[in-house]
Image (cartoon, rainbow, N blue to C red; front, top):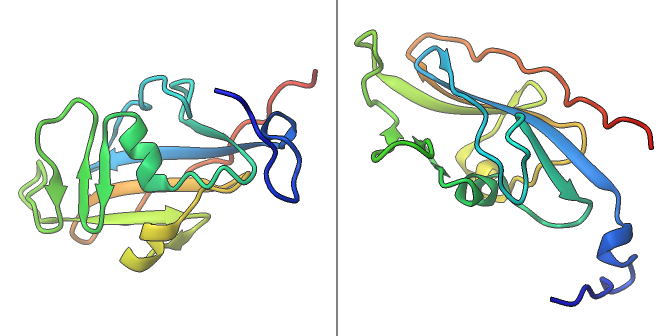
Length: 143
């Protein structure tokens, strides 16, 4: 595949690297970071180039997971958890996606593209629970 310049922008290889940290929680337990893929090294960080247009739902697809309105499936699972599915403690759960301490609506989730420095929390929470916080992504070592 040949890299081409974006109209009015620098060639893709010259674009700024973006890093957004993410964590996924299911019923009060943190899931392991997703396996290595085109957009992560398996370290809890989404890595893209500025302007790639990668949506959060596309990132989930890239690692074999699924994230939709009210639905979450992890890469090693056969079924999705949907709003009102029962958590381990017997309480019904709900999907919450929080970016930089602000919850996304279903409409916002559809179009959300991780930006440099974003902190993303995807949590299927038992009713009445508050999403845990996530730290900012680590900065790459100077070259």
